[in-house]
Amino acid sequence: MSLRAWLAATMGVLALLSLSAAASLVLLTSVLDRSASTLGDSVEGIRLAEEMEVGLLSHERLVRERLASVPADTGRASREELEAALRPQLDELDRLAATDKGHALLKSVRRDVELYLAQQRGPLQARVEQAGPPLDSALDGLERVIELNVVQARDAREEAARWNSFADRVGLAFAVLLLAGVVAVSLLLQRIALHPLRDISQSMRRFGSGRKRTRAPEYGPTELRDMARTFNEMANSLAHQQEQQLAFLAGVAHELRNPLSALKLSTALSGRGSAPLTPERMERTLALVGRQVERLDRMVGDLLDSTRIEAGKLELQPEVRDARELAREVVELYRSGESGHVLQLSLPETSVLVRVDPARLEQVVQNLVSNALKYSPAGSRVDVVVRQEEAEAVLSVRDQGIGISEDEKRLLFAPFQRAGNARQRAPGVGLGLSVARRIVEAHGGRIVVDSEPGTGSVFSVWLPLASVAARLPEVAPGPSSPLPPPEGTLH
Image (spheres, rainbow, N blue to C red):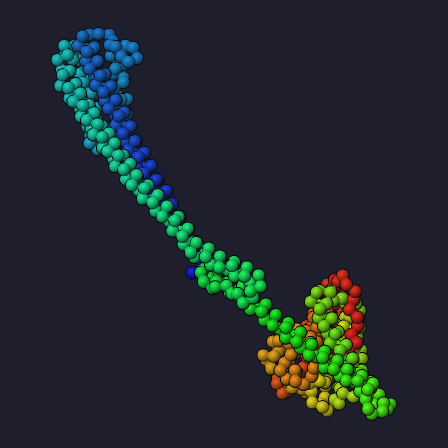
């Protein structure tokens, strides 16, 4: 399970608990508000019913004792004022009634009050004699209204008490659940995330302190496993690079020892040999010394170019040149020697202008031609072809050599890498093609290879034409001086 999914699930559970608590609080608030409203309406209904009772009794006293007014809360109230207050009080009681029974009871009270008031408009003696039944019925109805409101108020208070108790239990349960959730999340977070992070951190510190065999344990959430796996891959890559560097140093030492041994032997033979130092012998010795020095110069040049390229200090001095001329100069250089091969040059009739550093591009082509000669059987043909395809110039070198397998192609342009057959057929440290590729890429081009074991190889350099290269950003000059033009070929 990924850490993101685990955190999302945890936060979802906590959010659900929080939302449930909030929903319960809203529900409790609504219930308590309804209970409080019911309780308030009941109290108000009791007060209005009692006021109506007082008003009716006061009205009956005015009629019976023939008084002009009676004492009231606002002073003294007359008969007309008492009658005017009864109907609004009945309307308010009817509005506050919450049940059908209350509405029916108030309807009966209203009828009795209206009958009582209608009787009071007759002769005085009739009003006094007939006032009893309707008035008693209205007062009795108001008492029942008061009792109904008292019951409603008591029920509302009991309901509020029940919900209050329920809210206490629910609140306590949510508090316990949230506290348990926080504790569980903390423990699980420590076990699922913090422990793997601690182990990865410790592995990194041990690796940085020099214990190169240290690897991080791959467990925990997906993200942390990926982090540990990435660290382990990086550690394996660094270990492999270190092994490659050690192998490279051993190879360089071996390659340097061979020409140095030959030079040492040549000087020893020329100085202390028992045979006389004839001109022919001196010429052979000098030729051997020259070949070994040239070999040393090529290896040192390869190392110097690779170092400067990796440091980002490769400088180019671009100019517009005809790719045909550059290829012709390289082919003529190798034709002048005794390579034992047939060099075939194929050029188009029109110019193929490219914007390049001539010395560097010649270095690349020389490397390709030199490799083709070294890895091809004696007497075979090596073709050098220049052509134009759309907005690119193509310089190809085809040989009839040992060929390259698919597995070897993947490492062909990597530094210090050489194919198994190449190690046996020709000396070198495996930097030539790597340097050539970086030089071609610095010109905005690419180098590709098409080959199969036993059928030869075709190396092609693709470069933008001069009109296209003019629109490409130039390589910024580095802080160091430009590289010297190559004096030999790359390997």
